[in-house]
Length: 531
Image (tube, rainbow, N blue to C red; front, side, top):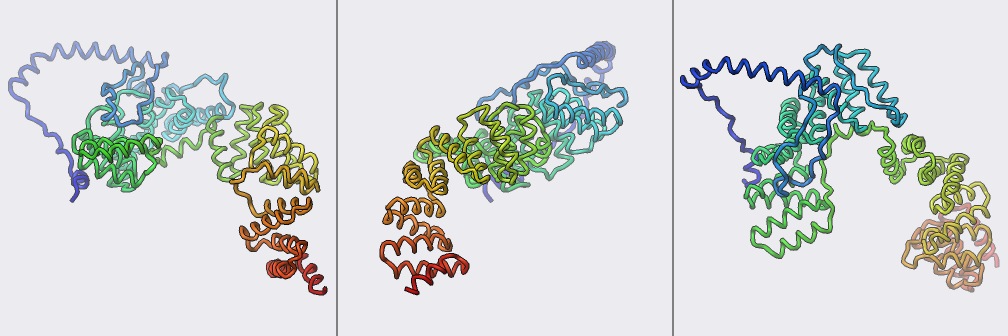
């Protein structure tokens, strides 16, 4: 059994209670009066603290670092956390709890509407843990963290055995920098409620590592590895902790496994560099260090519960990023509602208008596409993407000269842009401006990819301007790229026939007809064979 696997099955023994000595019992009796006095003072302090919560918003500490604390020298002292006590006003009846009411004057309308609705649900049923949790998540995902904390605590108090309430409260506090011991205790409670959720063990390990409790951190990481063997960040964290504890062989095993699972995680190779150096392998250490410098730290904790709540955010910046990701995936219909939220927050943003134009083009709503793209160019006349997209709309509308004008404007901004020159050249061919098209094609990148259809347009322009030999190469390339492209074979046949190579031309006419029996190559073939 490997060192890494051995450690997975090992756990620290639970602590044992010691019986109280007779002398200690006597001392306890003698100090009873003093304790009663201290208790009274402490009670007064708690009351003052609770009253302070209701009127003072506390400052927040920065989020904790991503790096492994044991390896970065991060402070092990808990952050100061003035203000809200863990209990708050939980001693009151739920119907006596005050409902947080953030300032909404300058709030984004969509966020305000969600918040108003969530507060209304709590007002309607203040004893509902679900209502408090809903308000908590609305506040959480829109960065109203003070309110979110209060609401999570109340949901957790009303439903103490609900895993997600405890877990999300711990997650929030973990990010806001309070006393790590409370965060750890919340993660431990959550782990007992849902012991098979690897992510809670990973986060517990991170918290224990920040406290400098490396043995406990390692146990948590190994539990995460046990539950989710393909969770790369858990292997990385375990390896870093082994290294901090001086167990270099186990660190090597865990980190090399992490490197296999997450080969783009720079932190893995940074730690491996230390491992190899400790083992005396300087060459491999330098190689790992070089690789770590070329990579970003990308391994994160894939967390369905956290992802689910943050997917409900309607803040403009979140919707903007969400829309861009959807557009990159070609999910235009799904991107639209996200972009409409962003547009309401940023009505004079040319890029947002351009994105909306792209959505409407790809959902065949040309009138709406035109409206947004015209607006984009009013805001920023030289925006390349808007000019290209409006050119596409004009072309689909049959307004080819207007399309060419927009393509030319984009080309002026980026004269060497490969795709712009191809698009402009094709439009000029459609408008029978063959010499101008040849000039536009000349501006493409010689190493750039040219699709088969563009080779056909390019070849047609060359043939129409007397460059039959050059045209031949473009048509031949088109047939190689797309062997079942009937028109490429037909155009190649026409060019070969013009060059007097009739037998070769016939073979391409025949191929075009085999691909598409109704293609006009059939008439050309009949004419050639008739002669």
